[in-house]
Image (tube, rainbow, N blue to C red):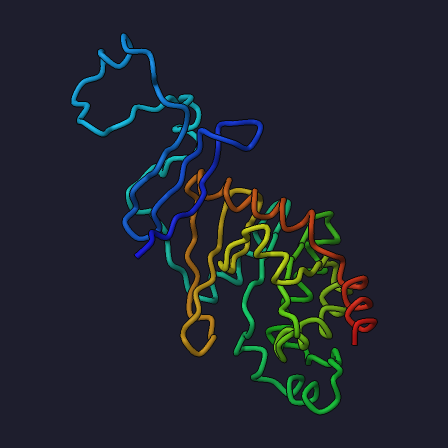
Length: 255
């Protein structure tokens, strides 16, 4: 069976080698780059076995892109502590939404109304969790902080994705900036299937779901290489994603 490899980064400004990959299952690190070919250099290598090839990589490549620990140290938090993160970030909160369904969306009268009418009405009562989140977003963005999302959409969109597309107008009214991208485009960019928030370009909140699409807990990750990887994902996704208003207009035109 082929390895599940993840590209971590490259030391080449041109996007070529040398580069570092990580085996997601074993944790092994794979480095490729230009071979060491001078016989006098090769003669100085210790414990080189037949068939092994020595390669040359910049020191910064290993410092920046190889995992710092065999197993990443994460801290698992519950959903209440996760919610508190939105009151504590200083500059930016950025989300990549990759799933086809979020079970929590379906546990409300708004969902039933959407199924019947195709519309999402902003009628959350004071004290409702979503109302509290929107109020928090208004407070944070009023201070100049940015809250942004890229949502991946299948073609055709799932019911859950259509619900989020319709309801996004209320997130945007609360100060969020939401963009969308077709899954085929996300796949071409090799965006991951991970669903996460990135806070202040230093803290990853990796969302964990069960087989029923229920959010169960969140893993916090601060490993520098992993944070940089998610920042690169953010930059690529944000550059290629389409603003919500334009995206929905194009969807309506295709219908």
